[in-house]
Length: 572
Image (cartoon, rainbow, N blue to C red; front, top):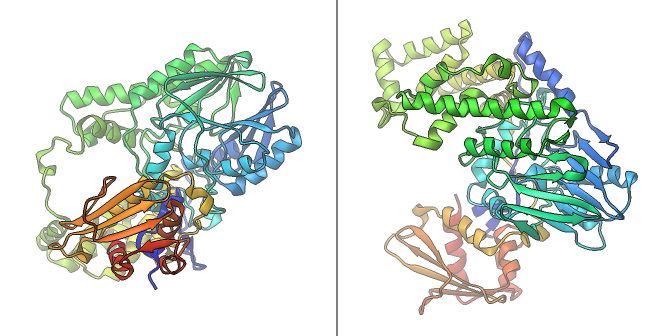
């Protein structure tokens, strides 16, 4: 039986396809906490799980997963800003909010597309008699679909490491902007926005004047929410109490740092008195404006000085060595490196303006790692001599150098088992020494993987209702990038034509070991399929079996055996 979920695993339904850890655990090296690591533990106080209530009828749910969720009491109706990272958390948060005020929810507002702000929305919606407004920027839905779609497997894998979702609970201090990630504890609950805007939108919701502004920063679709009556600002992820992720190691499109500064200027111009960030605790009073100012200045400093040194011909590593935040900025509690770092930001800014080539001619077409390993090992007396250098690095505590030596030894497949254990030991050490939780969790997770203590499994089961929020085009995009060229005949052309009950048509043409997707059906189709969009979505997501659906007449295929054979070309 062909199980389609195996050939594509359309992690489409999951913003993060997480892993689970086996019961085995890796012994933690005995490492004395540095003062910086101690600060990371203290930073967890920002995420103590609680409901914080304010006189203006605004309530903050903090510590329920990564992102804060806000509840605003209006006249006879309530409003939610950011819907938590899972239905699991949304259920808990909603119970707390309902105990405060049981009026219906009139609107749910997404500050941006990230799953920790959107994946609990369905639970809030399902508790209402009428569907509330779901408000976001006009590009938010496309951004969500991109994460669900073609990049999902790699983003899922890297996100799982960065947030430490597979680590033993005691190993996760926090994730920098929240206590832990809850995605995976329940099916995803994203609801597509039904009210969108471009630059700004002003609405009166439940007797409260809301103003929405497009404010690119951590994401291009970021917005901030302004309540003039309360002098209250909801900046989304454009400020939180840690140095910002101008680049995230889980992987992302380039973040426009200059636009981020401009967005903060828009907020500063409003002179807010009460600031409710989507991560870390709200803050208010005379220092609120000053905090916004120093945050934007820190970001601008890194941007401008990176550009200045780029224009002097410096490569990224040279820039990192020559750039340091001004002391007044570096000492701000809002710019400690518990999420982003200056060095990662420099590399991202450089790449955003000039691309991956640093300008160093030795890096344009570098020696392969395999060749480099051979050259180095020959230079110092052979592979065993290179292995001895790895052992020496481990003994001396030069763990970063040990990682780099292990790269070379693994490339030439020398004493792989022993090298892998040393690599894991180095990763464990560096992870426990790291005060940045992104790096810490990533290294500790990678150590567990190297020692065989993790296996990748999809712990977020696809849910049929979620498929309604995802357009059919995205499913075909995912199909296209999952084609295994080794499983198709390069001399053969196969055209699979889809006609949906909605009137939508799609053709998938297998040619020259690529899959072209087009909306126009050709005159001659190799295979013809008639079905409902939802049926095919569920088949591709692994919820329904294609053979059963063909037998039931829900998937009408004129050449079913050939169609099922075509599907195997999309397996790894």
